[in-house]
Image 1 (cartoon, rainbow, N blue to C red):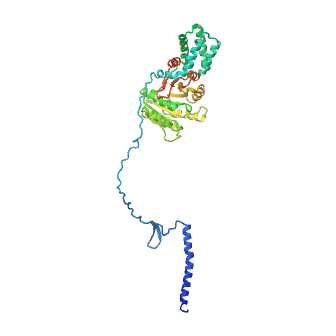
Image 2: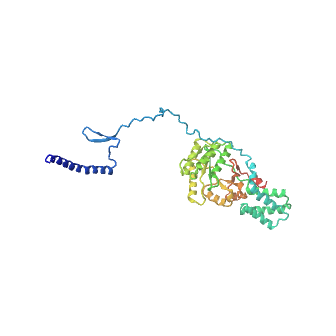
Image 3: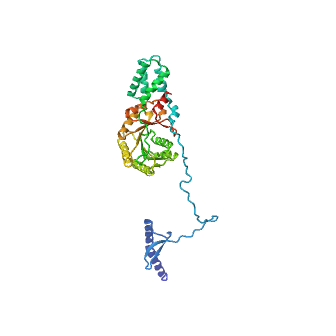
Length: 404
């Protein structure tokens, strides 16, 4: 028993030591869990010890060599030829626009709806066996429905009354000739419908295109570019409509079709005046004949947007004179187009009207009404969706188309 006593005491001492170590180990494991950044045996980094035994930094252990799996060929990297960014992209073929002369004649059939009122309606009434007050009332109503406007309607009816009284006869040929003469007077062939698109003072002519939303300004600019290219003009387009999605791309596509460059911004919502300025600057540097600037559509009752349009014009004029301000109007809006035109005329000096969608309305009289209200000539008319369905306006040709 006495021999076992030293052994029992040794075991007891060892248990005391172990009892103290267990809490320490547990505490260390808890610390490792609390601070997960603490390294353990599974960490791939091996501590580097300085000469004095102080831990300096953790250096990553050497990465094991990688071997290719069996059955896989390891190829040395080869130099690849990088293709041009434009390679493979669809290119737009340059088209030859239709000749400008004779467009209105070719498009005469598109005026059939207007022809229904002016040609058939008025001619039938005027050729009646008896023209009394009821007939004159019908003629007046017909002209008003054709959007001729109150003052031009009364002027035409008074002239027709006098001529019918003097003429005495109402054969279809005589009536048609009489009506043609009076309508031509109303449309006024004496108005200057020339597009001012000639270089002057060593600078290009500048054309600013304005209008409300949805009237087809960008399309009109594209079609007008075709008209000018057909007349051998060197043209540059400015995409100052920076608010409508894809407006700049749409305009650039129109330009590409006839080989005309477009100045545009890659930033959505960029300052339209800045884009217009850069377009005119580029036109001067490249010595083009005409710079056409497309602007964003704006409601005529939005003061801020209208002021912005005035700013665009003023900024352009720091570089060059604005030779044409073309207001694009939708013929199908009728008399509402007059309200739009008046407001735009107050902000920018309108020099000409472009009347679109004239083939889609029976209200061809809007041509006369707008000219009378603004004393501004209709210079171009749109008679279809084709790329060359934009024609210079001619008073006699237009009336002949109505009465054909």
